[in-house]
Image (cartoon, rainbow, N blue to C red):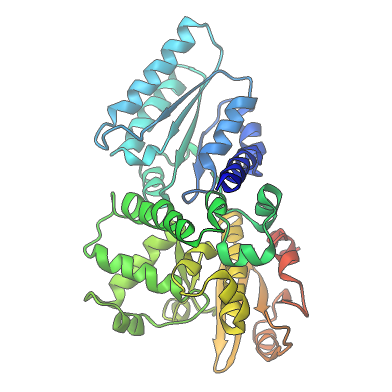
Length: 411
């Protein structure tokens, strides 16, 4: 127990020490003349607040940091109060510039209107207050940005931790990453399956669904939303029509409702339903979705096998392996505006189809070393992709692929 506690403390310190690549991007933007509000976006437990604290520690600009955690959601006057404190500090200390940071800003109703008012007032009066906003709910945050702040902000996106980051911070193995995913806070519990599952459920699943999705989004059937997430996470890497999904859910609903809930879960960085690749946009939207989690911890949570059991079962491990590749693709796509699909025609399929700037890359995942490339060949004949890639023992190894900058595939 003492050893486990000591290791947990060490892991926490390593987590704090690791600088994600967005750290340098935020530093560089804050060193520029005041231009736009900087908005830090990303799902829960990926280190947004930690990254900002690292920046505050290292920059020379005076700063103020506020959090909405204990503020009533109706208290949008809180934002005006924060701004007034910042202006007073600038005046009394004769500062030429100041950085104002507000964490979890999306919790406040009409927050974007209040931010717009204060930002525009500073712009008119030449007050040099630079602003950083953080939020966990992509649904609520993006709605506010679109409503009031168009042209006034830049986003810095943060995805789930990569294999490289988990290895640098904790020495995580490829196999551990495939099963446990990339939540740094969960790593301390991987040797205690009950505590690990409790962390994933409480800190990730419940917090995201209850606090991010349901807080400010009209959802007529909250129980159905949760069931939709549970089933789609368990089916990560597999195709399942919305009609068949309805047959496995207890609550009544329709396919339109499920599609809307999947969209909310995708915007929250939990799970998405990939569309089938087709040149015709209508055919894409009408396709059977292929489910894919953003972090493999969410898939493992809803499967019965332990880490050791999953490793010993080729079929189970193959699904986890493909899903892990998918999580990396989704997170890179989120960061770099890459469109992700799958393709299938009869028995022939391609696991992932990526599109960026008009170029197409086809990716097939082979965890067991097989080299059946019939699907890739048929896809190449029909769509002429820029590249066709196999990820697996007889292609690009998973460890190498999970450390690639996927933008390089299009160059």
